[in-house]
Image (tube, rainbow, N blue to C red; front, side, top):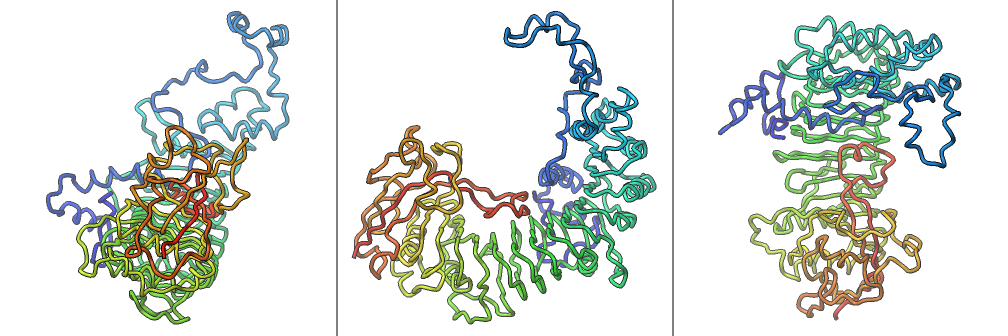
Length: 599
């Protein structure tokens, strides 16, 4: 993935020549720039929405009719009839007639739409009626379906497929072609797609060489509702005074593409209905991502080299999501009154600013630096560093109505002089609004059972007056005992799976300090789903602690919570999916915990 990295502390890259020079000059570089970028293209494609029709297997190179299903209800070979079970009607029903063709046109069109591109075109030879149905069925073009004997696909194959179809083109997925020395054919292809009112377009340029400009004909595709482009230099014209270029576009993904900041502004101005905007290994020049949109609901930055992210004016934005790396960068939220989901916010990399106020560890948080709308926060924290631990507590004050907190424990590395391993570290922190009345779920990612981690969890268990669920994301969810499948995101009595007995385990937790190492082996007990009504003496959630280690302040305001093993749900596709309530995890099963504080 190192090919995505790049701008580091610079001002971004203006073209792919600069990217190539950067990678070729890397210290101890083993791979060339071409090899590096070639190696990440499959990863980029894996992030794309799934194809409408899966591609054939790579070793399926046969084009004979024997390898595909028959469109008639007959089979003339006697051995097939002999192998049928006795319950199957006798062979006299197989009259050799084409019963499928008697189906209504809309059903036949549905059948064609589920076939690979080349197979759907072959239905034309069946009869005049099938030819008419194929022509009336919106075309789905996927270059993965048009491979030649050598496994490659030529641009002319895709162009001929589009030209041969007289009707509309619903979607085109082009991820295996190189457009080097085929700029004119590319322009013609995009022009034909625009004329056929294409709605869904995925267009990748397979290197090498790079730095091909995306044709301006893309602006004529006014019918597009979803657009993903990869490995292009997009010079979007600054024509904000003109009518929107993409009046119907709702989802846009820029993958390993170069686009200038001012061009992003012009692009967003031309997409009045855009809901989802994603960047994957992308480059801006200068390296600043500035969001101004009245319609956006989701913005995702995935392994990009931006030096700064600014949400300047996004009144409908609900999710701001990151999968970040590289150097420290500011994340500035100026106006996003409906923001509900934020993460993963890496406290080592991200410097958060809200309403023009830089959030610093331990500061007094004013109302202007709060986001009352936020419900789900995901953070990456090194609890060995006191500054990051204090910053997490400060963030809780910034989000007074936070309902779910995801904490990903980062590797320890070097420790800060101000140790977080002391029990009195959290004593002066006090409580805050979200702990008093809103935080219901705490989710632990990468929990190792270290003392600094345990003390934080104990603090949340003590101060969280309405906490209902404590969840640990398992390394391998397949090893976790699951009886009835995943449970819903809210844990209460009604969510407990039924099946003769409760699937919840009763666990007594004394003192609030977690003992032991939590992983999938601790949660699944010998293939059993759990032991009901059992006090766990040495398991992941038990252990008695002395007064010196227990947080002060008495018992928790909520004496019964649920322990819920969980699986990670964090992925690019879940990040951009509005139907996924929480993109970071999914619950597996539940166990009740009785919290007993030691005074």
